[in-house]
Image (cartoon, rainbow, N blue to C red; front, side):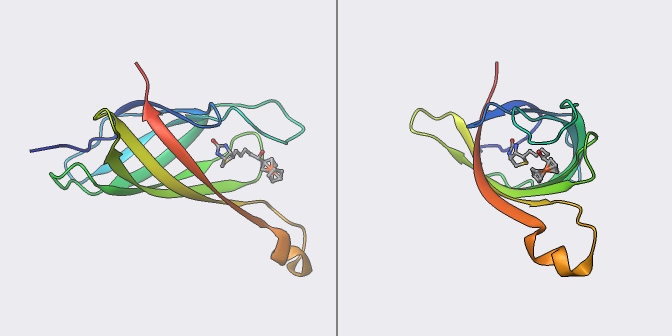
Length: 123
Ligand code: B9F
């Protein structure tokens, strides 16, 4: 049976990397996210991620994780699904929401960005 274990190193279309530590028997995992891009004033720092994945045996598991950016007051969540690419390589299709801290309720409307990232396995 095919697998979908997110454990290991991944890189996305922006050049960001993430390392997922061992996925436990319930599908829970933690890791670190190394974003290649930022528009914060402060330098980028590796940031912790925590998430969970389904453990289906068809290689097409869905997953989600949260990144708590250590160099800004913002938070990102990613959700996605694993697929096999043309050459059988693992491809993670994901959609993210990035919440920026705003200083007041009237600014809430502009606090969330969204986008899409594709991850492939490194190494
Ligand atoms: O640059 C972001 C940030 C948040 C508040 C000030 C700076 C933090 C890094 C986010 C990285 C995103 C991308 N990297 C990646 O791999 S997460 C989704 C993308 N995928 C200025 C205000 C709000 C955003 C920028 Fe900021």
